[in-house]
Image (cartoon, rainbow over all chains, first blue to last red; front, top):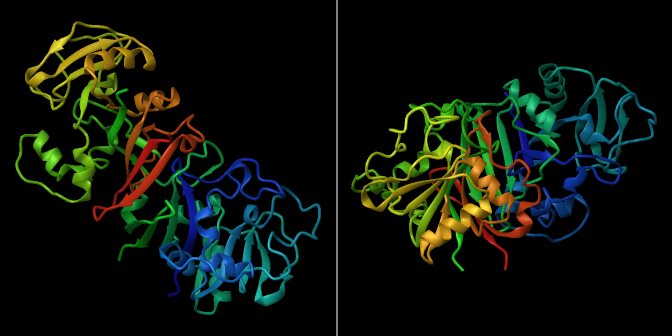
Length: 215
Length: 215
């Protein structure tokens, strides 16, 4: 069976995985890019933006697992865009331009459906009003035997964890106190009992936690 | 000037530094000893309980800094005991028996004063109804030029951080989701800006974070 995986998911010391006040200019709200600073210089993240070079250490090793073996992504609507409620403008095609870095089908969970979007480079966006389990069934079918990535944001990852649908979760614990935003951990008491957990800190100051479903 | 330090202060992934429901039998409430598991086998913690042996790795290195150079401790009343409100029974002398591991004056912050307690081994308990800054002044005087430890619990550490009175903070991030209890981080947005921060994970699974006041 293909796995359900989360990668490069950054969380503050106080458990927020994104800030407050998302806008078109600030996808992470008041957190701005502080949760992702560790990743921006890696070869993987530079490559996503069409740039050469980048670091090759442990942060890169962790970041690079993001795309390997992935056949589809599921994301929440707030990862796709800053809009809330019914779509005012179907011109919005996500934050990533004409050639998004996913290169697979991407299923966007929303109560407000709209037509599929076919982007360049193999990415397509499909809008689904579905439970985590239902969405996973659709995404697995689209992934053709490869793994499914749960791409965020925090509410979406939390919902999939609560439904016990995640096999591998890679968190980057960032030593900042955000104070406000969207919490990852609410309602997940005792989560550690379902996973084998490893931690490694790196010179960038973050600590990578890997949670792998216990067998 | 002597330093104000916090050591071996354990926090869950969701930011709780103690559980819910403290009782005489469960000082950490429903968290029981899960936040301190990493420390119990170290030479330092075994020594506190009069036992020989214990581990000598990085967890021990971090744990052992607890007592070095400390001349006084300040603790909250909930670290001293499970009682709330006016003292019903002044026979209570803390969780630690006749010879507590502190071996210095200890100042217990409470609105409900009671006479000093002189214990064996150099520990004495003094009850203070004071602000963090006022308590620190008293404790510094008692510490005779040595450092002052803020011993917890979470509300007390939080109050001293909010008042910007902490010079060194050693946290052990424990990869569990407690779900409920007392949060450390509330009201401390942007705390990282005042500190230099290092992280090191150890084979026990915890990550030690040291926050040292930026100069």
